[in-house]
Image (cartoon, rainbow, N blue to C red; front, top):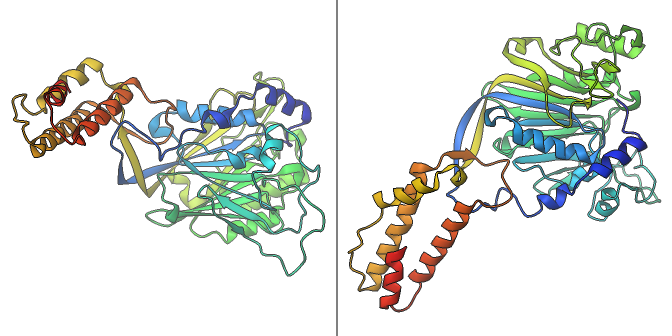
Length: 432
């Protein structure tokens, strides 16, 4: 559908809670309470979510909720986002790297105005400016250098382009790259290429805003695709081959149908699937405008293409979930999940690993050895009783068990650094 109108934006901004501050103290690289491991695995299937955020900040929160509620083995490795709110440039989704672009550099100066739903300058970016791309590692660069022309004389407000990607951190950044279309579909088409065991998997993400998408340029881009191609997005077009609203067919929707039919692409969206509705009552006004196409050669590898039902997406655009069989090398970071351990089990198990109580503690070397055995006993206990979970969507606060474990390790470390061994210290060591 078209970009969110002012009334919808006001309503959804009133609902908006501070998602940025909620996650500001947390990221994947600052996790306590367990040994973090990184293992290489071979992913057998890749799940892609195509999500139109309608330019509404509240939908970022709904998306994060949907990700947390999804089963661990069903969480998407790729999020193809359409119509992102500008503040998404300052917001990380835990467990994912973001790729977005804009016609001008986006700085922290824009954040206060975007957060308040207002415009800094009231102007749009100049159409001939060099697009700037950015990833979550903080790098940026011009993907379309200026042709020797001078920059615009007036200040312009940088805006995020209308499509972007989130890629799960388990896929190494050396295994994928994203590119924004800098031609006729500048800002409306982004392409993600992922290395698989067989060949490159290319995902084209499209948002036909105000019918500005150039289909000729799009399919030329698809024809030049390396490897297998997937095409997802909000096309805002009705056609009898995928929609029940044949009366709304246009010359452009027929053009899309003809180009798909004459190309190597095939629609995998089930015709008649409601991908958009004005309300939760799908009988009032609904349509099939969020579409997914793939190369005919990989149709047999498509496990499914369906609606992913989630709170916050039961009106407006639905989440479109596609799973494809593809072998992809991933690096998975895991940690013990202590909040899933029975406290009594955790208290009883260390005795199987702790050193004898009567070990001599008369020298510093004996103390250090004894404390090392205690720490090792705690680690062995965690390995034996705590289930291992993949690091990604994490809880913000440490669990009680994690806090207790950290406190215990801190005490052990403090005792180990004591310059002298007193009867009191020896007693405290025994109590650990």
